[in-house]
Length: 244
Image (cartoon, rainbow, N blue to C red; front, side):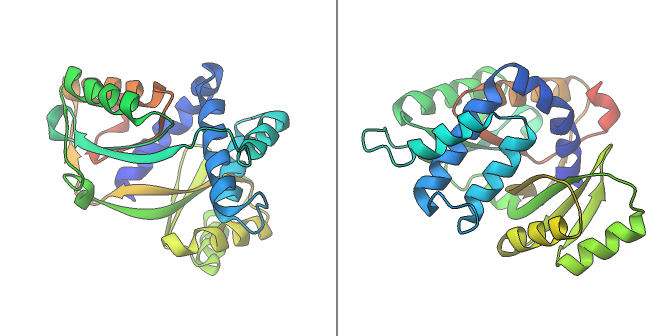
């Protein structure tokens, strides 16, 4: 979890800025619509929708927006959204995975390719960097008055694989198939869940610093600011103090 925890810390600080820019609500709406379309509008029977709703509500997405996103899933005239994954390399040879939802692949693909090539990287073929990542479940919940020993007992009892401490939250990793049962167990134990989702965790990290890290951060920010991009993952390893 070492590589992911650093990006999680960074994204945790950056999240409020995304909401202010109006980007997050658009992305959450797409996640909710696709989840409801694929698995139904009942979050208790649709774990993917439940995870999307948790994250949207924690980021203050209005209930009206959430309802519209769910209702949109049944719209007969609504353009279908395609889920796509782009793989490539960034500055310093860092592996990058970009997950998108788009209603126009012909628009999105050249835009993603352009961002890669303009900022010191290159778009690769499917599978070119995916072997350096593994899919996991990831849960964040807010810190409270519990001690680390109490947290460890709750996490282990819930069936999680690992946990780490962030600035004001705990991060928990799970097997893909255990994400939702662990999330429910943590909620039942009184934990305030911030997000519960699937991630791509790097297994083959590359150390970056200085100017290379700055270029990589700029590229990641540009990807995350793209309306169609849902998640960005890298295998970069760096000193968190360099983020300043």
